[in-house]
Image 1 (cartoon, rainbow, N blue to C red):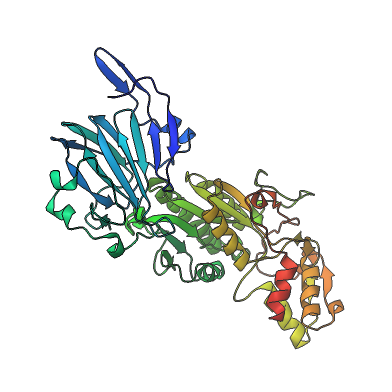
Image 2: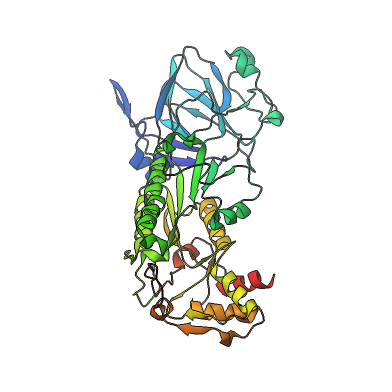
Length: 469
């Protein structure tokens, strides 16, 4: 019998992400009414905002109708419309809880959220039972399922009505035992811009992870008009945008300006639309160039942007676009050093070749190695940190470019006094091509990401390891 007058209550189960909800049902002599799905109230209680796109109804004529244990590649919200069911859920996802079982009875006053990869089965306890389920992907013949036999000895489900006495399809009777089930992997992570410095660092960070895919521009053109149909996007849980136009000086030219806006703003907007439509987490990498560098203290995540040049303007626009995705991490960094041509490598080469460089000494910031950015991105994703913007640079004391150059000279066994400090104006005085304006203060406050449990490695310690190894 349906219980009237209960409050909306969330109850965790032994299967991660599988959550039971008691629903308020209001009834009188005429019948009853309930809010079957109320996004604002249920997300306030911690239910994922899973974005349902399809509503299905299963009607069952007789008590004892039993439907097989199916794990679909989407999330489900299951609620009884009339009658009563016994439900059995088995975790068929990769991980420590593979094979975990939870059972419960559901009537119109109870519902359950079933995350992707958790097998679900229902046995009706009354005739004319109907239950509804909202799902956050459209049915597809190409979707990959996992199945478990209803009589599996390891799961050992205690069915109220013995399986020998109920209606079961021949297909459900033929499903495999747990030992033969292939666990469902997590939703895929897609790294775009995989050929760049950060892309290569992300390959190293996720080495051996089968659910991570990599795409270069040749594989996936983010400016193509058919981007939204280029993949079955519902299979992805995260997109990491490691693609960017970073030629800050060339961006000041007519051709460079077009390319910078296309890569750093338009493409990000396209990814944000895909992320929003498919409940994907978008990770976007930003830059200290979104600030003008006039502040005399570190920039935190709440500071209004004020870019000086085209590159900074396009990155600020990309940040605004990325923020339209409900699930987003904007990772703001500075002074990036990665595999390939970079400032550290250039200084080490000059030191070895006996060249005494003049290096800018009126810009201040922290080096950030791409390995550190990759580690921080993985941390935000794995820890399920609150969505939003996070500063992520190397730790330690801020330095000028000239001070970093002297460190490179010293660490490679050369005389640091060979490095001469000069102003930005003097350094670029003889330039014949356009020069982008640089922020003088590129120091980013790191308290927010530290609060998530991530401790940025000291930039100089990382520099020493990179040069001495």
